[in-house]
Length: 372
Image 1 (cartoon, one colour):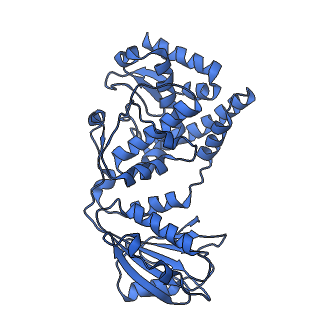
Image 2 (spheres, rainbow, N blue to C red):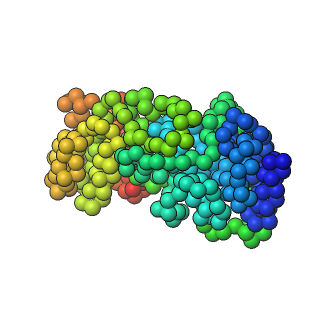
Image 3 (cartoon, rainbow, N blue to C red):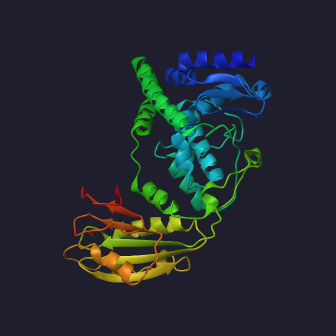
C-alpha cells in the first residue's frame, strides 16, 4: 500500500517535475523497518510504512524529493563519504539537510514536515554543502536540529561500488536535465545548479577551509556518532586535543592589496577559531622576509600588523620564507601562501602541505593551487 503511494508520487513528478521524476525512478523502493523514516544509499529508497502512513500527500512528495536531492548533491556515494572525512559528522549531516531542503522548497516548490532544517540564508543559490558546513562550524554554539530522514545507509558499500554509484548518478543527472529541458520544464536556477554539480568551481574561501581543517591530526575528524541519537537534535562544537600551527605568507611585490591581505587573514582566523588552540606564523616577503609575527587566539585579527605586512616591493622570491621556517625550526601543520605566483620557487617541496592562493593565472610547481 505505502509502496503504491510512493509510486504515485513519482507519477506526479513526471507531470510537474520531469527532472525530479527521472532521478526518483532510479531509486528502487524497498521497505525497511530498521529505518525510522525514509532514507537512501544511492541505489534504494528505503521507507518505514508507519512513517509513510503519517505523511500527507504533499509531505510525501517533499521527502521523496529530499531523498533524491541527497543523490543529486553527491552525499551518499563514495565521493560523499570522502568529502565527509576531516569533518564533524553531525555538522556535516546538518549541512546536507539544509542544502537538500533548499532544493526541495526553493527549486521544486514542495513542502516538508514541520521542523525540517531550512534557512532562507542558504537559498540564494550560492551555497554548497561544504560552505554551509563551515558556516555552521563558525557559529560555535549548540543548534537544535531535526534531520527528517535516515542517513545510516550512506557509505554501506565497497569503494568500487561507491565509485560506480557516483558515476551512475552523474550520468543520470545529465540525462534528467536534458529530458526536462526538452520539455521546457528546467528552471534557470535548477539548470545553473546542475552545471555547478557536474562541474564544481569552489571559491577559494571554501578550499582554504577544507585545506586548513584537514590538517588536524586528532580523531575528531571521523568520530562516528550513533545515528539513533540524531533525533535529539543537537550539534555540538568540535573538540580538538592538538594545537593547529599554520603558516600564512604573502608576497609584497605589489600583487596583493591591503584589502585582499586583510580578507585572507580574516578568513583564515575564522576557520582557525573552530579549534580551541591555534598558532599563526605570519610571513611577508618580497626578495627577503621583511615581516614575521606569531599570533594566537588571544590576539585575533586586531593583533596583526597588516600595514607592516603590506610594506615591501621589488622582485618576488618564495625561498626566504621556507628557509626561515627551516632555520628557525618552525613546526608547521601547513602553509598558506597568497601570491601572484610569479617569482622564484624552492627546488624541493617541503615536508608540510602548502596551499598557494593565486591572484591571476600564475602556475606553481608543487603544492595545491586555487585562484583568489
